[in-house]
Length: 111
Image (cartoon, rainbow, N blue to C red; front, side, top):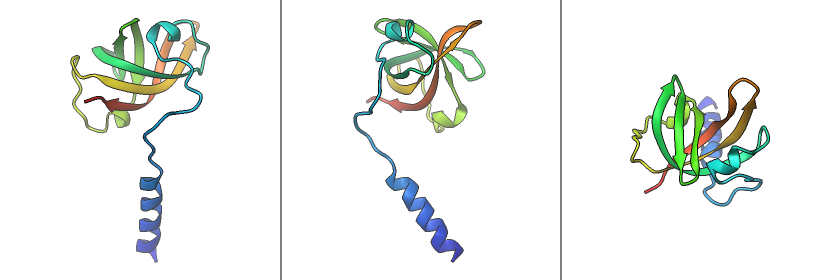
């Protein structure tokens, strides 16, 4: 019984993956994110160019640079360097003290 339930839940989560257009993406560039409201959904393509601290990185696209926060589990043990082009999904985090940053929910490597 336990094995059957485990297989059921495992297969359910596997089937939940979708790679396609996302609804409610409001910001696609760093420049737009610099003016966006808190919790605005973003989708960026560009590069992590510098580590700023534990889980904090400087992200760059063609329009500018912004600090992003990426939890270790979002990396999925993948190696990324400043020449690795990536796509990040997340949301703007607007703070009085630190300005605007992006909290990354998902990171994809672009071939």
